[in-house]
Length: 426
Image (cartoon, rainbow, N blue to C red; front, side, top):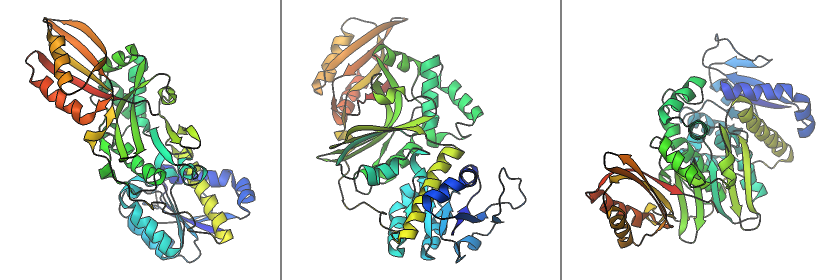
C-alpha cells in the first residue's frame, strides 16, 4: 500500500483523483501496488466538491507533511509560496514529491532538486510544462543518448488559441482575447500568457533538462503577442507562412540561445498546423534527428494524466529502492548568448511617404548595417502613404537594431509598425 497526500483540490487535483479512481485496477496492475489517496489539503472544508472518496480532507498542510504513513506528496496548489515551503518540508520529512508548479520550478528548481537529492527522494514534475504531453520524461530518459541541439515549442494554449482565431477568421487581437477570456482560455489578467512569461518559465525548465545546464527565467528573451495585428497575419499568409508564439532554445558553439517571441514560420513546418489550445514541442537531436511531441497542454484530465504517470513511476522507484536516481541533470555550466548575437531573418512592416526613392534609401540604410532583403512587398495606403514589408536575409539581431535606428530617423518613414522574427526550427 502506497499512501498519497495531495496539496490542493482545484482543477488539477480533481483530475488526479478522478484518474486514480476510474483507472484504479489498471494502475494497481501496472505498479503491482495499491495506491491510496489518504489526505487532501483544501482551503475551505465546507465548499462543495466535484469529486468524493474515502480520503480525509484537511485545511492544515501539517496533517499531510508530517503524517508518517504518507509516502508521496502531490503539490497542485500553484504559486511560489507556500508551495516551496511545503515541498521542502515534505522532502525533509522523507517523502517523495510530485508537482505541477512551473512558476516554482522556474525560479527555485535547483534548490528543490538539491533538497530531493540530499533527502534521497524523488522530485517529479512532468505536468509542469506541457500538461499531458510527456516531454520531461522524454528529455530525461528516452532522448538521453542524444546531444540535443534545438527545442522549439508552442507551449502556451492561450496565445495559440488567439493567433489561430486571428489567422483563420481574420479577426483583431483585442476581439479574440476578449472571447478567450469569456471561454476560460485566458485569465482576467492575461499578461502572463499574452506577454510570453508563462512560455518563458516553461522554456527555462525544458532547456535546463535538454542541455544539462541551469537556465532561469532571467536568461530568456521574452516578447508577447499583443503587437500582432490582422495585417501582419495577412502578410505572413502572403509569404506562405503563419505566425506562432514560439519558445526557442538552441545549443550552439557559443552557448545557449533562449527566446520566446512571435515568429513567422513556413506553413510546411510541423508546428504550423498546431492550432487552438493545443501545444507541441519540436526537438532536434544529433542521433534521433527531428521529433515532435503534441497534445493538450492544460486541463484537468490531461494535466492529471501527467501527475498520475509520475505517481506510478515513483511507486515503482519506491518498490525497487531506487528513488532519487534521476533528479537534477544540470551537470554543465554553459554560457547564455546575448540577444544581440541572435541570428534570424526578419519581417519589418513600415508606413512611409509614397514618394520616389524612398525604397532605395531604405535599402541603403539596411545595406550600411550589412543587411540585404529576401523579398519586398509594397502597397498604397492612400493620402500619399504606402506600406512596405521588408523580409531580410538572416542577420544578427544587433545589426538589425542598428539599421532600425537609422530607419526611424529617416524623415520619409512615418512609423515602424512591427518587426517579427522568422524561425524554421531546424
